[in-house]
Image 1 (tube, rainbow, N blue to C red):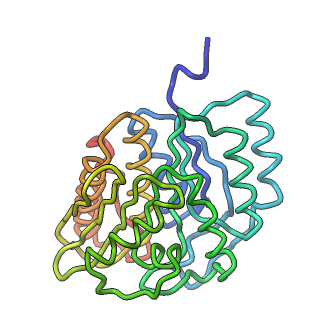
Image 2: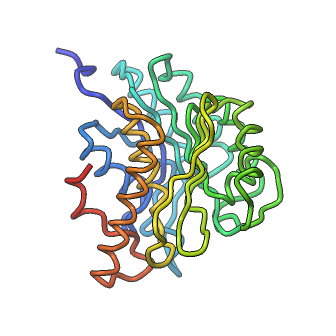
Length: 274
């Protein structure tokens, strides 16, 4: 018997009990795609930071002991997906995790969860945001939004950046490690574009109609599908299209059910499509 008979993805992210984001979004999606999801929490939230009030605890002091137990089990991961970090200290924890568990067969996806619309999230500091850029050499794929890609590249944020500007930014970041980058959720009128960069191919745009308002958790859904698809051997650009289409359908279902904006995207009824 071998644990390696089923593919596994380690998801290093926060756990939010309500709001459909982070581990709570990645776990059902990765599982639906026939891969075992193994979460390592970076923080515990009662509900995400988009609510007026929330409980939050930093999980930094427990992360090393947590991963040590996994090492005792001699676990091997086909994928590693990182997301929200709760402190600067966790940058070193992520690097240690890679030393323990990453090998030439592992696909590493870094979702640099930091902010949106040109602003950092409430729990993020400038030091933590800058520290995330030190994870680029570890990543095979990075999935930032426009705000996050600007922070990583240390360029001024502008909501109207064109494709040539995005290409230069992606080339700059790729030189530091990741072969593939997708800049997600570019708001361009009535559509949302995803700028897909691959070091070995011309850049492409994956486009979906813009449906409803911006909601929490869409980036987590997106990166989970990308990570699982790549572990399953799917083409990168095709995976971006699948993730974008799935989120668009989930947004439609969310509007149909008239859920509050804070409650994320209603993807549960669509998991069978993955």
